[in-house]
Each structure stands twice: as structure tokens, then as C-alpha cells.
Image 1 (tube, rainbow, N blue to C red):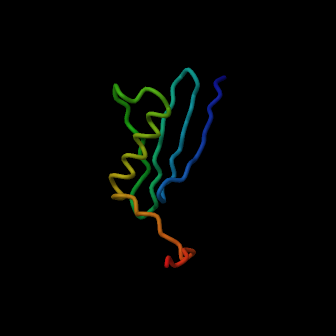
Image 2 (cartoon, rainbow, N blue to C red):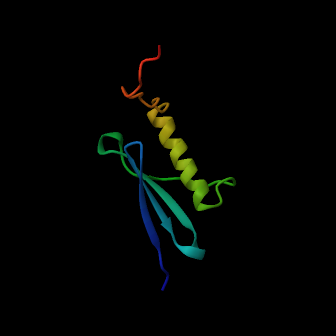
Length: 82
């Protein structure tokens, strides 16, 4: 009997599902918001070997769909400079 580890992470309104099956391999599935389509598995190639590589590829795919990340907002806690 094989043990599988499943973890979910939030990233830019998407859920990234991490599946680790030990020696049998690993996979990453992107779950976008309902209005943005169906879940899809991150594809492997010669450069994606580890689970970490797949997570980085998933984040890159989400960034490509969502566009550039917004700049962090500056708070109003700043004191005026004289």
C-alpha cells in the first residue's frame, strides 16, 4: 500500500494542489476560481524534475494568466518629512 501526501496552497486566487506519491512520483494540479475554467495538471518536461520545479512552473502559468503582480500598497503610517 502506497502513501500519498496531499497539500493545498493559495496563490493569486488559485489553489495549487500538491500530490506526492513517494517513489511513484509527484504531480501538481492548478484549481482556478470557478469563473476562470477547470482544474488542470502542470505538464512535465525535461526541466521539471522535482516537486519544487512543478510548483514554480504552476506559479509561472498562473502569473501568465493573471498578468503582472500588483505593487504593494504604501500605508498612511508615514510621517511627513520636513
